[in-house]
Image (cartoon, rainbow, N blue to C red; front, side):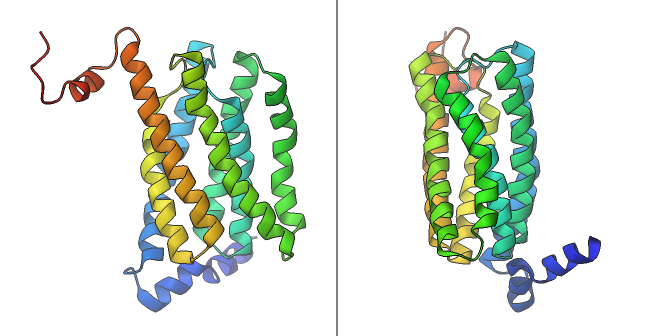
Length: 241
């Protein structure tokens, strides 16, 4: 097992880039950043789960986002094995697994709509689909569909906040970490020259940024908004009395 892992790491695109360019390459620098941000990303998703557990409520939290992304990240981890991307493999599998924690809590503390149940049933099919189509033209099709699907799934979060007209149990710390993580992933995708990967990352950056903006907007309309948001809102104006 250990020998297989070492062999995979030595054959990874990151190791080859390091041998050719040392640390000074977009691939290596973005890989290091992703490795660090993966830790914070896992913590952020875990904190979202704890917020749901503490409030005993999943109000305004998108079930579709966590169900789709949890399976998609694991699928991307398997795709990372296919393209010999160590960072993509580790990040995808680890973050995908921690999403399961939030999914279980949402199933317990939030009433599910019929389409959310359908998503829960169908999304786990993504990882085996990636494996079964490895090396075939269909794998690229599934990968592109999954990358675009992540953007759609993430778009359900700002949509749910607007629909509910409240931020509910949404933990903004997770999305604040997702913004720089998505940007770094975009740099990594560019270094690989993987067009579907680049497209998925671009969509991710846009949707996560939109989620943060809409959360801030709605939170300012709710009672007792955070002082930091008030300072940003009134930046350059007369100090609050």
